[in-house]
Amino acid sequence: MIDIHCHILQEIDDGSTSIEESLELLKGGEKLGFKTFVLTAHYHRERGYFCEGYNEKFQRLRERVLEEGLNIELLRGSEIFLDENYREILETFKWESIDGSKNILVEVSPLEIPEVTLKKIEVIVKRGYVPILAHCERYINFKLRDYRAIKKLGGYLQVNIGSMGKKKSLIKELIKYELIDFLGSDVHRIRGRNYELQRELKIFRKLMGRDYFNRVTLKKEKRDEEKESSLIEWFINMWKGLFRRDRLRGNIESS
Image (cartoon, rainbow, N blue to C red; front, side, top):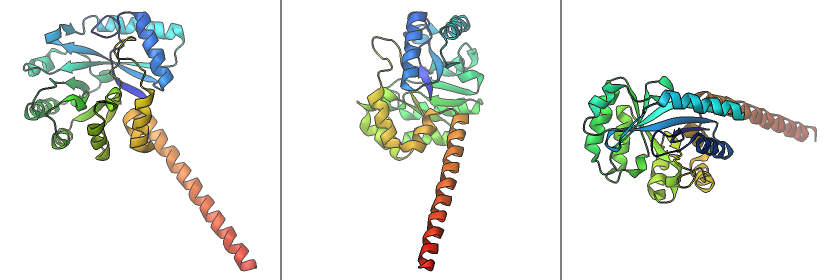
């Protein structure tokens, strides 16, 4: 699985405070089933987070991961807070897109009205980026029509796995209409928001079913492998069914 939203990169925001804590978090995520981690450090001017030293910190952590022999993949990324000066923020390029792509993880104020967010999404898309709205279940003024509008504009929606408790009713609605595009942990610290998410992840699996769950947790190439595997499995079962039917017909005719 891929964790598209986590604050595991050390000493850069309100997440991990050391490489040791980062490694412990990564091991916890790997145990839960994650193999790829997008290290989405906050870019939040109001809180004083500017992704300073990102490249150096990322390289140091990747080297330690190799030294530890962890079989995981680290990708670059940021969680960009879109304040009223979001156009200026988009032009700074001091943040990280997801793995150098046009995909960017963004967030807004939990109290923001949908119309303002939709305008921001529209501007981002027109500038050639693909916005992924982080923890979309948190925005208290949003209705289903607003989530649909974001997707219609070309945006995507990410839900926090840990929100399954407090936001279960809303998340079930989002699942019902298949509006969720990505799941993420939004992990920050060992003591606090960590990878103790077994129960919540199990609920997501049950509510979504295998295919939908894989779509929101696997990288594209892995999703393609799963799709191909499912297709092969379907063909095998189909031929088994035909064989059993022909054998049954033969038994009937011989009798």
